[in-house]
Length: 84
Ligand SMILES: [Zn+2]
Image (cartoon, rainbow, N blue to C red; front, side, top):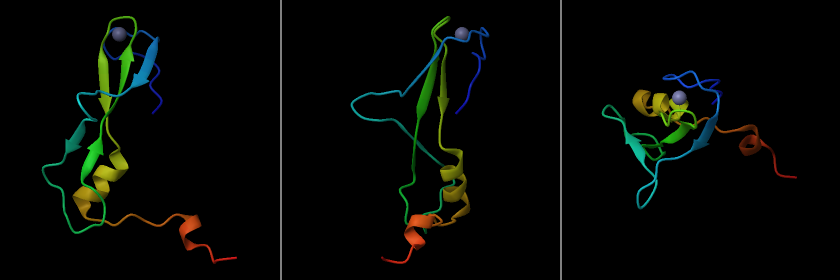
């Protein structure tokens, strides 16, 4: 995710990472559908502003949309390839 500046102070010294306790932190969607073969947890990633300390949190919006709408993961081109 391309973030150019801090939403609090406007600083541009941003460092990506993730919020961690004893494991990774996941977003659990209240309206998740469970008829797809994909874990419903959305991993949370972060970017911290090195100027003011503000931490911005982000999740995988495409995955969240698939889970809420109950759409299965579309296979990539490598999964459709004929064996050699
Ligand atoms: Zn900042």
